Amino acid sequence: MATRPVPLGGTRLAGIGLTYRLDLALAGLLLSVAGGVILMGIITAEALYPATYATGTNEISDLGGTRPPAGIVLQPSATIFDTSMVLVGLLLAAGAIFVQRAFRLRSVSLPIGVLGIAAFGVGIFPGNTGAPHAICAMGTFLAGGIAALTSGRVASGPFRLLLVLLGMITLGVLVTYLLLGDSHPMTPLGVGGIERWIVYPVVIWTIAFGGFLAGRAPSQGR
Image 1 (cartoon, rainbow, N blue to C red):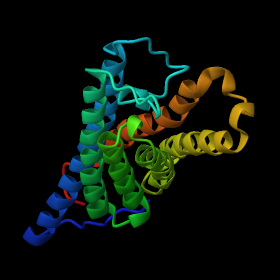
Image 2: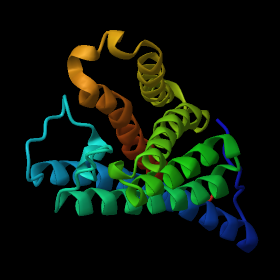
Image 3: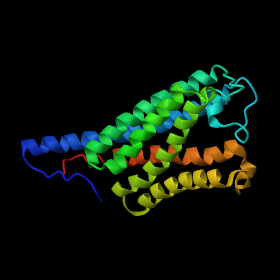
Image 4: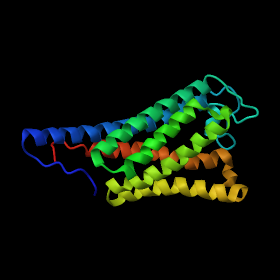
């Protein structure tokens, strides 16, 4: 397992141990909260959507604004969703900093940081903005799947397999849908259902990995 070794003993070393524990705890807290915010943000925006909204036919981003040329923006769902995404982006970006401080592995922290930046962009550029939104949304899909895969480097046993599996589901559904389009075997779920098979594994990973990091923060320096 790749972690920063922190030996015991001495005032200076104890200080290093405290920093390590804080880095893990903050990284875990920020990631878990980010996952909770986007999950509850989507649920709330869906519940308050003032028009017909179906998870099979509507994309998640329709909550912030539908694609051009219609570009329909409905409140209060748009504000709830966009604000949630901006907050999630900031939380993930901050969490990536503490993940890097704890593990010194850019292969783990960088995808999380990119995921945060892309999520922030989704909130700033809702679906009705067209191309900017599409770029940011694709960034969240790709970075989220990669982040789940690479996070397995700091886990072990069955939990590592779970993290990798979540990343594989996201990337697998995304890539096969891009290649197969309407002939994809999950087409009966609709575009909204397929998108949720891409997004929700990342949301689950964010909460699970965050809890794992927070739980690993030892009570004594090591």
